[in-house]
Every structure is written in structure tokens, then in C-alpha cells.
Length: 277
Image (cartoon, rainbow, N blue to C red):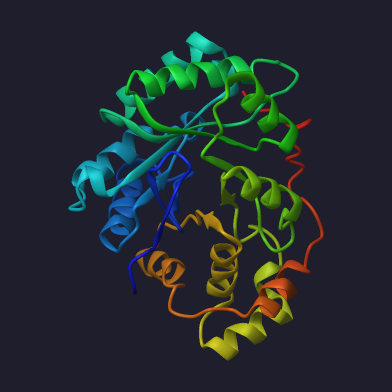
């Protein structure tokens, strides 16, 4: 497996083109799974307050042989912590749970527009960055209009927007908006969990052509779109397979064909209506 490449975010920091989702990786088994991923070359671990595993993520970082500066740890502020001072307090709580001296990328988990505090939360994240608590700040599940509001109100552009993105929901318009503003797209549920995606004829045929798996075809599609996928797996062999997608390249026509599988959101996660606290 070749090393996972990196890109430079709009604040000058580096960011891997593929990372590890850690949802439901808890306890000693979760720590072991994350440590195995780091040992096999992963450099991005994605967690959140609501995943209830920040302690395990921090422990995996400490147990790994990669070194702190070689890793990027992401966490996310939950809806119940929205607000300027609340955001800073939430980040401090995450740092305590992680046992780390900084968070590399801090995101707002969901905008929760009915609460109306995501701009104040963004201001708190800017404060936390200025205090050295976090290195980079971004958002998750934000629309173009919401990001525009953040920029207009504060002058600070998010480095990342982490959103539902997979061949059934390729988010073309949002990705174009991101590109215009220098925002890195990040894909949650990149393999469209609990769907028939990986049995699609197009993907199985391409997997045969490139002598890889349908999973690898999809993850390579993400990276060629300019998005960082964060597949979750506790199995070391599957982790290595998921990350081993940089040794081949799809044609532009094949990328477009995969994007043409579009059918829409799969889990009713519209940021205008879906809210999580």
C-alpha cells in the first residue's frame, strides 16, 4: 500500500486525501482498531463529542508509533454546545477527553438552523483557534447559504465541509461551491452504508477491469472528485484495502459514469430540517 497523499487546506495546513471514520469504535477493541489503522498508514482520525469515543481516539494516538505531528485528529461540536462561549467550552471538554494539547480540525457537527446559533458557534471556534486550542476550523452538513453567511459575518472561510457524499448522492453543486471558495470537501458514509451500492453492475465491472474491489473503486472515485472519504472499519485487512486506492486512476468518463448513479440522500439528513443535539 502506498502512502496516503495529502492536500493543503485554505489555511496552509495539510490534510490527508483519505481518513478513518471512528463512529462506534469504543473501548479496548476500538483503540486497537484505530491503532492498527495508524500503523498501516492512516493519518486522519475523525471523531465527535456525540460519538462518545474521544478518549479512545486520544489513546490510540498515544499508543501509535506515528508521532503526534504526523496525525490529524478531527472532532465536532454537538448541537447542545452551540453558542460562542459554549463552543470554546465544548472544545476544552474534547481536549480533556482526548488527552491532547490541540485538536487539528474542529467542525460544527450540524448547523441546527432552528436554534439559530451556528454563526455564534463559528465565532467561538475562531476564538478557540486564536487561543491555540485548535489548528483548523470547518463545518459539517452545511449548505452553500449557511457557509456564505459564516463568511459574510466573520470573514473566515471554513477549511472543510464534511457532508453525506457517495455515488448515490455526489453533491455536484455543493462541491463546485466548495471549489470556488477553497473549501475541502469531506465525505461521510462514503460507501453508502446499508444500501446496494457496492453491488451495482458498473462498480463490479470496473473492479474487474482494475483488479480491485468495488469498495476501492468507490473510494478512488471520491479522491478523484477532490473529496476526502472517511470510511469506518475495525478490521485491519479491510482498513488496508480501503486505503489502498492510489495505485490506479479512473478515467474522467468512468468518474462521470459513477456520479450518474445519483438518486439523492439516503438517510433524510437534509441540513435544513435534520437536527442533532
